[in-house]
Length: 391
Image (cartoon, rainbow, N blue to C red; front, side):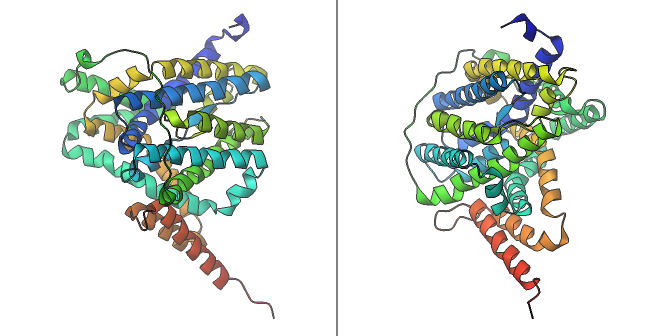
C-alpha cells in the first residue's frame, strides 16, 4: 500500500471499526449459524464469507470513489435468522440468503431505494425489529440464573466504560468477560486451535413459506434498519455517494457469497462513523484511507475466521447469550423509541411488535412476516378511520 495511507489516525480508525464490528455481532452470527444447522466447516465458511464480503465491498468502493464507504453484515438480520431458522434446513437457509440479496440487487438497480423503503412505514419496520431483538435482550438477564457474577461484571464494565468512551463499552465488556472466564477456568486457551477458514459451497433449496417468513423480513430489516441509517450517516458528514450503485453492490456481493454463508451485506452506520468523523483524519478528502484500512482488516479476519469461531465456541453458552443481549441493547432501545414515538401509530406498532415477538408460525411462515402484516392492516384501518370524508 502507498505511504500516503500510512497514518496512525486512519489505521487506528480502520482497526477500531473492525474490532467493534466483530465484538458486537459475532455472538449473534454464531447463534444464527447454529439455528441454520451449520456444522463446524460451515461455521468457518460463514466467517470467511462475511469477512471477505465486507472487506471487498468496503475496500473497492472506497478506493474508486475516494469516499469512506464502510460496509457490514446485517446484525439485526442475524438476530432474525437466529430466531427463525430452526424449522428449516441449511440448504433452505442458503435459498433465503440468495432471495434476500436478489431483492436488494433489484432495489439498487431500479433506483427505487427510497421509494421502496417508504412502502413499509418506519414505525412498523422498527416494531418488527424490536419484536425480533427483544428475545436477545432478555437473554442477558436469563444468563444471570446460571452465573449472576458474570452478568453483573459485564453490565458494570459496560456502563462504566460508556461514561468515558462509549464506543469501546462493548469491547471492554467482552475483554473483561474473557479475563473472568480464564480466571475461573470456564475458558481454556489450550482448547483453541488456529487455522485458516475454508469456504464451503452449499446449493440452495427453496421453500415458499420460508421465502415469505424469513427471506422477505431479512431483506426488509436490512433495507430499513441498516442501509437507510448507513446512507443517513454518510450524508450527515457531508458525503454524497452514488446510493444506487452502493445498494446494488451489497446485493451482488450477497448473491456471490450466499452459498458460502454470507447472509446479508449492507452499508454500516454506527461503525462507519469511526471512519467518517474528524478523528479519522482532519481532511475529509483523506478519511477514505480509514475505510481502506478497515477493508484490509476485514479481509484478514475473513481469512482467519475459523480462529474467531473457535474462540467463541470455547466460551460458555450463558456468556455468549449475555454478550449478544448486551450488544443489541442500543438497537432495541432505538427500535422501541422509533416504533412508539407517535401516539397515532402506537396501536399498529404494538400489534406488529407482539405478533413478531410471539414467534408464531402459520402455514410455515415465520412471525416476522405476520407481525409486519398485522401492523400494516391496523395501520391502514386507523388511517382510514381518521381520514375525514369529503362532503
